[in-house]
Amino acid sequence: MREVTGWAARMPGAALERWEFERRELRERDVAVRVRYCGVCASDLSAIRHGDGLPLVPGHEIVGEVAAVGPAVSGFAVGDRAAVGNIVDSCRTCAACRAGRENWCEEGVTLTYGGTDRVDGSRTQGGYSSEYVADEHFVHRLPDGLDPAGAAPLMCAGVTTWVPLRRWGAGPGRTVGVVGMGGLGHVALKLARALGAETVQFTTSPAKAEEARRLGAGDVVLSPDGRAMARQSGRCDLIIDTVGAPHALEPYMDALAVDGTLCLVGIPEADLRVNPMSLIVGAKNLAGAGSGGVRETREMLEFCARHGIVAETEAVPAHEVNTALDRLARNDVRYRFVLDMDG
Image 1 (tube, rainbow, N blue to C red):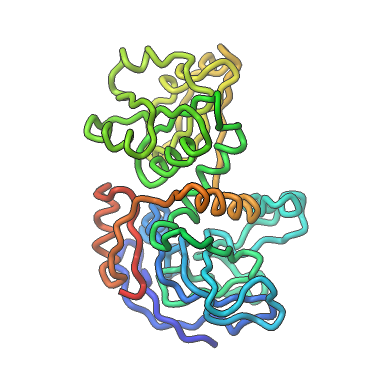
Image 2 (cartoon, helix red, strand yellow):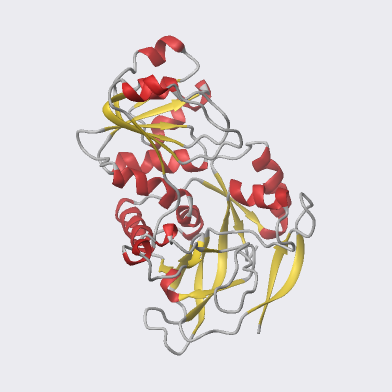
């Protein structure tokens, strides 16, 4: 077994503690990644609070270097830059997997942490650790030129917003709105702008207007301003809603053009309600998206490398993980914490 060091939750909601544990020995197609940076996602905070399957090492936005490879690995060598996202296995035979959309595996995916290994039944532990081991199919080459700290959140926030932008044709001649300017929203804004779309940032905060324009917004709309929102009627072909708190959807449905789509990628804890007429009038669509498959993830990484896109991050030493989590719970981050596992 491979001895590693991580940061684990041992009780629901408790502070993470340093924990020595074992990774599996490398299987034929396994890659061991020495973790340099791991992004801190809101879903990590939720998993810690709910405490399912303790002890739990969170983290699914992993970048580092290949430390070792199994005997049948063909795509990686020791020293290569590598990244791992929130999925580390699937059945690979169902229609979704064969289409490169492993995130919708009909048998269910194996998550990077809190999942069940399909071979030995062990519990997966995440990237808040010195090393991660996964099958090479779910390990991605990190393109040269991408800053590793800034690239870590692309493995979740990046691909989660990339997939709907591509699915609904963000590009020249199209107008894309982004609701919320946090970890997902600011990446969505950068991607939409680089794809060539006209971009509109919807935000509740006047203080974020200048920052939104710096990150790629062609226009900024303050959503609490009813008059300003009314002027957006019929404007957007696609709106990516990244907000993780309950909120009204109707103002954004009204901002859609005919046949437009409002795609939810944030996950509010409470159910959302929508007026059916806001869908019927204008033949509008309410959709959702989550993560992406192997092909989509690699496409996103290559696009980001070509356009110099990374997340806006604040790197903190791994031993300050609890401070980062506390600040994340207060929404005190712009826009993504990244743990420096060497720090």
